[in-house]
Image (cartoon, rainbow, N blue to C red):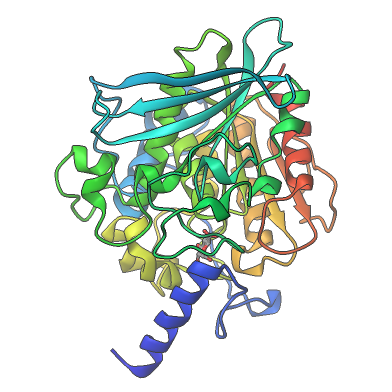
Length: 422
Ligand code: GCU
């Protein structure tokens, strides 16, 4: 390893834990983006053009799914486990000032308390007349960081230590209680009639090397070069949350919206591509390896991501510095969500996530949405606006850096009111 490589690696590690701006050398200036060609989502690998929904469903969609499995995220080796069990550990009928019922639900992947699992924190509005739509997302630091309620246990699972949350060795402590409340605008969602739910991604699988056995990937064989990485494991957990929602009569499992921020956003988008039970998908600055185009090489590149290859499958590393050879790009991941509503949220200062590349991904997925009878993205030029651009593919960019804010939630709720509620 050369000195430069070691330096770059160190820098990347620093970035992945502190989420700073782009490191030197990365492209953050639009005029430096090299020419690139995007594959046409409506042309099959054998050259045939997709002209109807049937060919899309039966041929092109499976083909694209396989490309993302084999070349990027790896194949999801386990489906819904036969032993999957849900235990309601607590039900509090007067949470959030009496507005919601709060549930703590153990999702036992192996059907037993001593097995692999995640705990979901679920709030359901008390004034609902019937089953309600739900918004679900995994968090970086566990359920107790998303609310200041004092009776949510401090988790014993691995936590990330996002932003100002300082942990020692990724062990949670009381100091984290409510620390990320602003990223979780539960009351806003509840007041619009949504149930909201979360679980900690680190309980599913710790975001560090050497943990494949500890989460869902441990339910299958050791992953090979085209098998699921950690994004695949976290995406799998989104699907298990859907399994739970299907069992709760107060929730309308036909209206499950999912969201995820940054690396968890990559997982949410991949979950939405694979599992068609998700009726709405929201990318919150999922960036490179998420919704942003790879071939633009703006901000975080495949080369950068290849240093965090545990998130992907080992095959993905062969595209480091060779984005032009990728047989697919992220607009085709967006297309796998079609015709379901997809909201892409960017932050203007978050150049590492390539806001314009996130927009272009939605724009270039639009032909697939149109083929399937939806409108896709309503505009053609990347907007310098902070207003929600509404369409079946929505786009919202707020000022400021990499984060999730009240404005992101307002856009998400506005979008959900139009597309998930109806
Ligand atoms: C790092 C990483 C990104 C990721 C981000 C996050 O910046 O390089 O790919 O999205 O962390 O998860 O916040």
